[in-house]
Image (cartoon, rainbow, N blue to C red; front, side):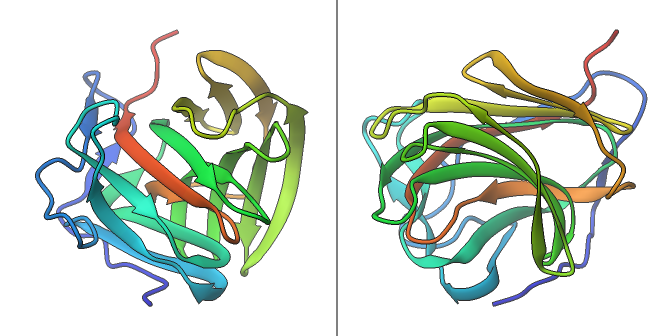
Length: 209
């Protein structure tokens, strides 16, 4: 699968009027990857990112479902190049023997270089990483419950070197990091055999002070 993208028709968020966009996957054909997204894996494996109907979705009829496996599967929106802003998604960990994770990525340069924040239903924690050269490095872990079989909201706000991670509206991580800068794509992420559904992928400009 592809590990990089050529960014075209770019949405560049750094300054200016407030902006936000939500993608619910409801106009995409079921049984196929979402239009305008590139999906792949950091490391090895065979992820399967497919739009599927789900009557219990936060905004039915469709969700984006990852039902394959891989080291770190990802799926990114290919026409976004965001410097500062926020990315948010609703996710439901469904099953997984090794992991039950759902995450978001930002400042994504390619499949080997990006930030990722994820929640894990098996470990009941949230973690923040940066990935460089295909190696994932931990910035912080915190205990935070994320029950399997339930919908949760994961949000990351990033401006300059500051990163704030929220789970279900509660701030769980707030720190500064300088490993990755400049514009990058946004997307979603899982780990190992996580069987995870995503809906209402939202991104936008930074929150005003």
